[in-house]
Image (cartoon, rainbow, N blue to C red):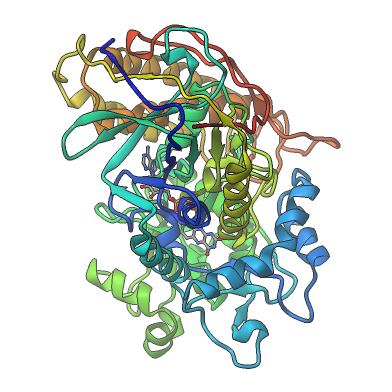
Length: 562
Ligand SMILES: Cc1cc2nc3c(=O)[nH]c(=O)nc-3n(C[C@H](O)[C@H](O)[C@H](O)COP(=O)(O)OP(=O)(O)OC[C@H]3O[C@@H](n4cnc5c(N)ncnc54)[C@H](O)[C@@H]3O)c2cc1C
């Protein structure tokens, strides 16, 4: 281990935020009134789920709406596993969250007669109109407005191309120390150097883990880094088996993440088998009386069933009968994007597959972003707060980022200080440059394919056990590679993906029922009483670079390091 970095115990250290999506930027802007903040983004700023969100954000604003009604809808979607206190806490603050975004200059679609002058739309599962939106690109509008403010704030140091590797805990220190998060090791991708970032608090806001599946609507950044980091640091994770699949993502060899909105089915688009002619090509009526208008999880399961039954790579979503003028005016983005890829949706059906869309589980936190380890916080899609239960209600995720981003920042500002010990620098003296990158690319593909085939929309115990066996082999191989070679982004992401894959499979094996997004052929019914799946463990040391074995965290600690 090389010499420790010295740090003054009295100088206030910055807060390090891992992630520049809505969760990370919200925390940063609230903190920056009083504190220095470093925000890390491992890829370009537009590679964040936030920037890709289309629909909108919930605001309980209308005269016909109420907190109770929103809580009820959230609970219904969450299939019995929503934490009512969490849902109410967030619903009560939803109007304030939308107002805060309006104050930041987010150009929501206007309606002079609407509450706050906003047009509210309605989405599946919501009893009333309560979704504030900026046409069909809400996430981009929110992200750009917050980024503009962040760039102007002298207290915020936004570092693009910096990837957090692990949080620094007592087990890195080689001596007794308070269980606390002391900072972050982060790879500066431009220089390929790993830097030690001491921090008074660390906030994990790194998004979900959609990339663990072969098909996903998520950006390349969604590799579960925050979940894996918190898990390695000894924090609990919850409800990892509940992965939301969007039924219709464009199937294309080079463009794998483009979502075909459910509104296209809402307007009359029909799902068809690609190799069958005429009315016989439709399959949804055989699966559900509501056919193409059945809920998201039902449609995703039906497509998965038909693809597996017929050995297909995709099915067709046919909207040609809706007419050129209608399609161009109502779905301009989809029309243009598909046309650029050689698919004219006014004349041809669109090849689609279901795709991993949202991670309902994650790092267990309270309503202030506190994890099990003092000084370590988490916000956004990285977390499990109890809001989403076994299935997420549309447009609740952006809301959760804003509401809990604020409470997290307030809690960090009010936390008592803890003395910061000197932190060891990252040690690569014993490692070599990677010999073959193919080990990483092969394992990436293998992991994502096996998760798709064995741990996808429809599960069986045998498939899950097979997946677990293979995941453990992959994990050992990746850990060995990690211990012996210099790190790079692909290797670090793969290490986190395999960690999260194991958490998903372990959680799925523990659930002996079908509920919400978890469907098992071996346990097709819901149990009368059900609980969240929470996995816990002690922090562990896997290799020399990590230092001596250490301690796990205490529950919801509230201190910070100075
Ligand atoms: C196509 C699509 C449409 C959606 N539509 C809606 C919608 O209409 N309404 C709604 O409420 N929700 C929607 N969602 C979900 C919602 O967008 C996300 O849940 C939410 O934006 C997550 O925000 P976040 O800040 O937690 O993560 P993200 O926005 O994903 O941001 C993660 C950030 O972390 C960074 N990062 C990750 N790992 C590291 C690391 N190791 N080191 C440094 N940086 C790291 C990334 O670079 C990125 O900046 C949609 C999601 C998708 C994919």
